[in-house]
Length: 298
Image (cartoon, rainbow, N blue to C red; front, side, top):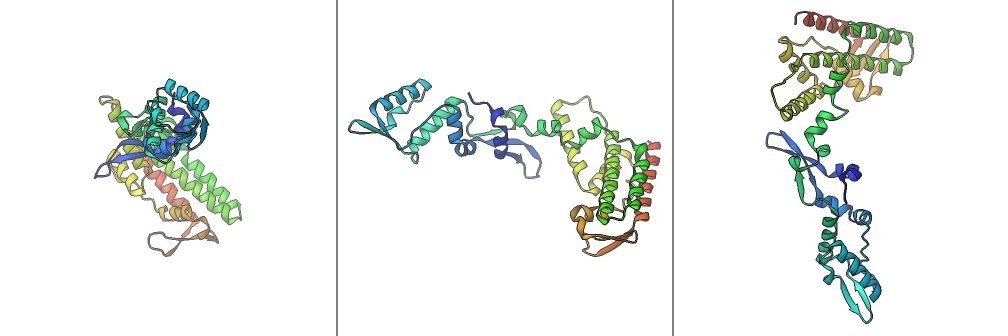
């Protein structure tokens, strides 16, 4: 019988999200009829059903085929043939009768049909379950592997020491990206650490909350800053390096570092701007100090 787990990779191509007019995601749905049509041959082969479309069969071959299909439970065998003297011509695939036969075969093999929505899908295919259990969930990542805030300054100092020690421009820019990544990870970890644990709501509600928080953690800096403010009742510290980070992440080759100064393209204004590497380091460390002060007050 059909087992969706054997076809999960293929099914994912037919998985989509059901959304409302306000863009709220209600859940996943699968259009099984498209899946059945696109993988008809493979599904029939897995079910060990061979339908010799358009072929000429001897009477014995036809009798054997009819018996096999009848044993499977196919009820449309009376439409399968055109008698030519002592032979039988199996119908061609491109007609409605053939569609009915294939549909019966796939139904009997247990392949779902129509469109199934979130509440009808196997758990592994549902939107909320996947968002909560996904290895890509940032919320779970920071819950399970929180960043040691107190080690931040040591890591940043180490990175900038390596930047000063190398003359390779690409290496410098890659190390800068690493510094920005560590800073953002520390910031996200601080946010997640402040999120209250809700014990008096249903598991489904917890999943919804987890997904919404995860979306904010993946969002733009102003979205994360707003979440920080809601949790700590104070604005997030300034992050003056965001434009540099975005430029490097977008196209690392478009920037240049000369005499310890980086020149980059501001993606918002489309203007070239400059930033001293020493000032970048100070900005990151100031951000860290401000975060520590906020944590001490909460």
